[in-house]
Structures are given as structure tokens and as C-alpha cells.
Image 1 (cartoon, rainbow over the protein chains, first blue to last red):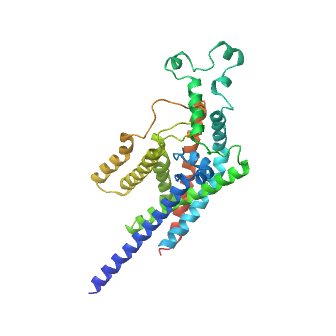
Image 2 (image 1 turned 60 degrees about the vertical axis):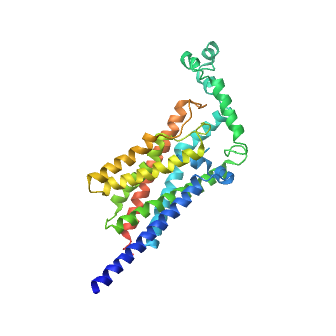
Length: 59
Length: 264
């Protein structure tokens, strides 16, 4: 019984940790896309030098 | 674990931001400005390359006989460069329409966004490693940072070299897809190589490392750069060198912060 509870708690902790990892990854990718790749004219002009200097495809 | 990851990522991202901005303005920005001089036609590659007497005696609009035969003349290149300007109507390049201060301010702000984003992705990797019982310290962080540089800058640069302003290139959407695919595939491959334990994972890693380059990045037929190749080469090399330094610092700081904080 105790073993079952402990196992399911560990599984739940692992799921929560993996969700945190996924959330972190998505947050990073969304910001990276907006700053480095989105083609709104305003974003592009403001980020122009950074995009060239980071090796992102710019134009 | 999320707050702990966020703390490490923001700390490391800010350290990287500072170094990236300093190194960019010290080593890279002048090449962007120089590239724009050639892009706008304010400077002309061949016109300024040879002493006046020699330039007058030779055809200043072609590299040499061999390139002239190939039809790669400076006139043709310049026309393409100008048509690029036309195609990018409203695309200011920051020159002329905004002050240098404003331009550099935005550059600094966007370096912050880019490196905080990279740090979030890097620390998400730390979190994944912890789920599987791997300990990350400053030393591992440094290696992760160098691997991150390889995934997000070096490997994409092998197909899409950092472009000086004024360089014509293939369809933007296709290049962006190749960029993201290469970064993701290289990152996963390096993770498998570092933490995988079987020949199968090593073999899969090699396939993932090679695949983007076997497929090949989208590219145009022919070459169209208006700036001297020395400028493009120095720009690309400095971008990669600065990237390595910044990623290494970011990884080290992230690993240090990650190890200093007790598991949440």
C-alpha cells in the first residue's frame, strides 16, 4: 500500500517537473521567435542588428 | 521547480545580455554599418579597392577576367543590391531614419530578449536533466553552454552563415524552418551523445547532427554580395566568436546558480 502511494507520488512529481520543463522551454521559444524571427515590420526594424549579429535569417 | 528554473535562467540571461552587448559593440557593429555602406552604394567595393591609377587602368567593375567571364560583374551585383532595397520598402535598417542612440538602444534591448530566451531554453534542459537524476554544476553548465552555442549558432551557421546587411538569400520562411530544424536536431543530438548510454543513441545522434546538412539549407543560385568578402568573413567569424563567449558565460552562470539553489 505504502509502496503504491509512494510510487504514484513520485510519478506525479515527475509529471509536474516535466510540465515545468515544457513550460520553460515553450516560454523561451516564444520569446526567441518574437525577438529573432517574427516578421512584423516594427519588430524587424528594432531587432535588425541583433538578428544579423545572432545569425538569424533576417530578410 | 519552475521558480527555481526561472531564477537561474534570468540570472544567466542577464549576465549573457551584458556580455553580448559589450562584445557586439566592440567587435561586430562596425561590420554591420560597413555592410550597409556597401548595400546603400555609399561605398563601392572595387572602386575603393585599388589605387586610383591602377583602378583607372583596369576594369573597375569586375573582379578579374575569370569572374567577368562568369558574368559576375560588379554592375550586376549592384543592381541586385538596389532591387533588394526596393523590395524591402519601408525597411529602414536603422540607418538615416532613426538616431544611432535609438538604434543601439533597441539592439541592446533585443540582445536581452534573445539571451534571456536562450537561457530559459538552456535551463529547461537543466530541469530535464534533474528529472533523470543528472546533477548540473557550473562545470556542466559551461559544457551545456558551449553545446547550446553549437546548436543555436554554429550548426545553423554552417548552412546559413551570418549575413552581412545587403546579402541576398533564399526564401525567408524556408530559411527559418531550416534554422529551427537544425537548432532542434543538433540540440537533441548533443544531449543524446552526452547522456545516452548505447550505440543506438549515439548512432541516432550522428544522424540528427548530419541530417540538416545532408538536406542542405535553402540557398540561391549564384552569389550577390556587394561588400568585400573580407568584410563578410570578418563579420561571420566575429559573430560566431562572440556567440561562443556569451554562451559559455551563460552556461557557467546558469550552472552555478542552478547548483547553488537547493532542489525545489
